[in-house]
Each structure stands twice: as C-alpha cells, then as structure tokens.
Amino acid sequence: MKQFNPTLYFITDSTFCDEEEFLYRTEQGLMGGATLLQLREKDKSTREYIAIAEKVHHLTKKYNVPLIIDDRIDVAMAVGAEGVHLGQSDMPVKTARKILGEDIIIGATTKTVPQALEAYEQGADYLGVGAIYPTTTHVKTVLTSTETLDAICKTVPIPVNAIGGLNKTNTDVLKGIGIAGICVVSAIMKAEDPKTEAEILLEIAKKLTR
Image (tube, rainbow, N blue to C red):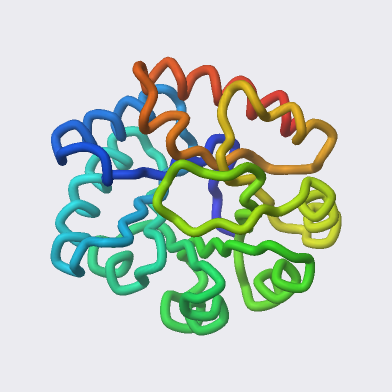
C-alpha cells in the first residue's frame, strides 16, 4: 500500500484569484500542515493544466506532500504526480490502475455504499465521500448524509475522507464516524490567513480521526 496521510486533504481552487495569489495561498496551506494536496482545475486547457501542475508539484515536493491531480490521468502522468482522483463520471478506477500501475495513489469520489465497494474492489486507495454540506466552489454537488458516510467507513477497509463545505465551525457532525480525514477547499483557499486556517483544521482533523 502506498504511504500517504489523508488527515488534512487540501483541494485547490484557482477560480477567484490570479496565478501569483493562487500559488501563494497553495503554499500557505502546505506550510500550515496540509497532508495531501489535490490540484483541481475544471476549466483549464490541457496545456494550462500541465503548466500549473508543474508549479504546484514544485511546492508539494518542497513540503513532502503528495500531489493528487483531479480527473486528468494524462496531466498526472505528464508531471509525475503522486496520484490522481477520479469522480463518478471519470475513467473507472480499474482502468486508471491498469494505466498507472500499482505505485500511484488513486482516489475516488463516492456517494453510496455500492459506489464505495466498487471503487475499493477496483483498486482505489482512498475515498472522498460527500458533499456533507453545500459548497461554495463551482462544482456540482449532491449532499450525502453522515449516516451514509458512516456506513461507507464501516464497509471498506481503505481510508475514507469527508468532503463538502467543511470548515472549522461545522465538523462536529463527523464525530464518532471512522473517517481518515477531512477534505477542504474554500476553508483554506479563501481564508484571510490560509496558513493559520490550515493549522487549525489539522488539529480539528486529528481529533476527528483518533
């Protein structure tokens, strides 16, 4: 099994700022203790995605944090990223595993127990489950109950992270559920002080995953 720490899974959002500020906020999140980082770009061309991925990978290597590329296996391969994250409309996990081999981290978004089982059986290394709350990012979300999240955690033996609108004020609903960590986007990316916010969220996540 690949070695990675899903406790504080930081997902980027570049839609509201220029590249300089984006890279600054991304690095601040890493400095604050993000343990995994996913680069998520829904609207960039392949060339643009690769260009920003190379810059972000330079940062993640500096902090010894695995870089996960959202959706795009070709971009992940092009920049030598440590992993890829696949949604329900993306390439099947088993196909990605066949292409990427056993050493690459593959995560999957799931919203039901059957989806979670399928992703695990196909070779996923971790799952992102949600959305727990409505999100402010430009990604279509379907809410997932904490009961479903709990059932998924009890069904699959791989790490399960909660995702969707999570911030330092609303994680109490996750107490007692066997999650491996939390995924956050705006809570760090749009924070006044991304580094401090990441530090706070890491401590919260540690308590939730004990």
